[in-house]
Image 1 (cartoon, rainbow, N blue to C red):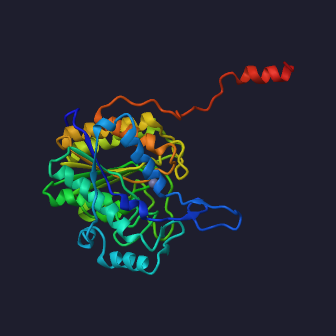
Image 2: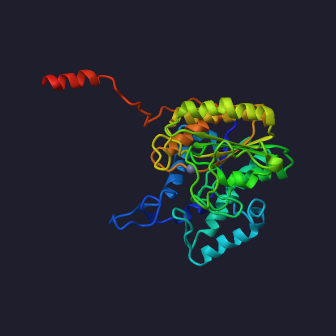
Length: 363
Ligand SMILES: [Zn+2]
């Protein structure tokens, strides 16, 4: 990738119209509160990410491009036709809660098609050669959407669609790298028995989440059949931060890529591993996300002629996630890192002895 070449950022404003309403954090209203808050997965997070890219320090290197609606026959490449119909019918009946945290409105279908189609538009930009790197700035996320199961705010799996598009274009092997703080269980499910798409998921070690989420994201989930060995989970302990994520890239992902030799890198790009995320218990800050972007670019330069497709996943603190996205793309572009305005602060013990000694002495 030429350093001067901009990144193509695909955006379709229709994704903002997926109305998740107000809630107690992310679940149905509680009798304990008289005032609810916007659902965690709302339009604000993406609007603010769009702002940072449009007006921030790398605006000159960002080329906004349109998304599009996915067709149902395109969705059916990674989802069961019956499941797609069930999602559409649920929306036509007025939407509502699909799981305890995941919600549809009566107007959600076009936004969901736009989310999936924008991932495809980003893939098409890279696969056609019009951009080396493309980012689908979209919502809701997709990586929990399994072949026939909505889960974790997700309905259609954009990363899986992008990886499939790369395969359809004639690329033999696709590497998916998922650094959303949650296990990319939907993507794992879709490609679990395939050896042409290798999935790596970095996530907090959260275990299984019930019937809709039978996977644990553990090391033992390695793929099956022809796909055995083509699924790598990296469950990181709670509190893991920049060091853990960058070591995972250097010590797990880089050797896997060396062995697998992918012709395309597809990324599930979340910012919910950040230190301030309400849905994550990890501790990554802007320098960590910059390091992730740098490493994705290195992987792309080494294996896929500088090409990579990135799809927005989680990232739920509207104050900080946009900065983390900025840092990721600065890394991708080989740009200097913007200083972190919320900079991670370590557990501070400096001066405590003197302070408490002085208080005890009454000074
Ligand atoms: Zn997530």
